[in-house]
Image (cartoon, rainbow, N blue to C red):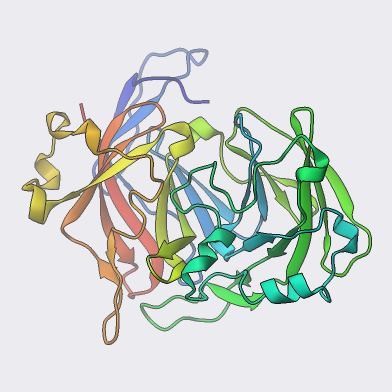
Length: 360
């Protein structure tokens, strides 16, 4: 886990990172805070197959395949389960409490299947996704009850496989074939979760106990491997996550976004945007005394897609030149951060780059 507070500043040029040394003993780990470091998260190109977790204070990144997990079991006080929005999963509660009697022929399932999806342009479909702002008490799956009979069976749309086709220059191909459907039911056993799961037309189910781990925001489970899997670093060891994301559009419901960035609000990493056209600041001169703490929010989309122009008919998405961000990391260190690139030199998407510096 990261040590609290700054004990060493590294000297680094914007494009040339060089570590400095000190006399600290190996038995006294140090928290490294980067000054002027540039980072290129390995999102993976126009298919954007990776979620990349960034820890600013140690200038480290962790990349995981975004289809490597399906469900996340919250480690905090609440008993909440999240779905994988990076592959456009969606879920709905059924009236049934017995998982083994649910199948694709039931009227309720057939009525729900066209609705339980991302990108239907129905504003009502946001009930089938987790709150995009990251509020843990507003997940698509209701809080797990200690009373088994109160926990419903859920119909789960597994979303889409990661795209594999070559995208046109400046475009993305982030989703491929449908991954199908599952049915699940989640119960409590003491301080553990009990997950029941099966294919939609199966007449028997599998069951697994999943324990909370207070070092992590979630314990993740994969239907593919039928095991828990490593995804996020420890909750104090990441600040930003580059990912494909299920967001919402006012009046149009849930919608999928590429090139998205979320901050680790569950471990108190906060962000706000500075618009140089409005706020009369420039990135190079922005200082610690310019930080407005009241501008931080609890919304994990504080960066989101706001660092790029969305494109449209006759134009491709492009980098915004007039914005930068103020970041408070999981240790309370303050940084300024500016995006340098959305694409590589060939104009291909999925190659973001940013620079950041400690404010002191």
